[in-house]
Image (cartoon, rainbow, N blue to C red; front, side):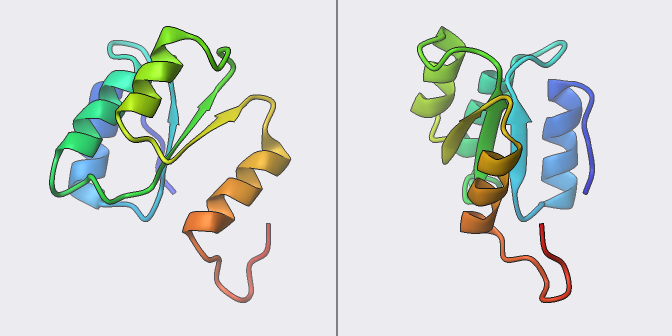
Length: 100
């Protein structure tokens, strides 16, 4: 697992590391998560990576709507621990010896 501090860091890390799943917060410094989501989903090399947006913003907030329009797989509202675990399991199967 890797963590990016900014939207531009996230873009670089995803393009160089090609993760199995992306958890994207919308409130990122420098570039909002909906912008990063749109760029990742528009690029052929990253568009098929499942991307789950996690946010404390209301579902009708404009950046949430833009993330949905950019093809984020899911929007998970904070606090989200149980819901996030369920969403991750839909896209990535944990190793047999790891349960969360």
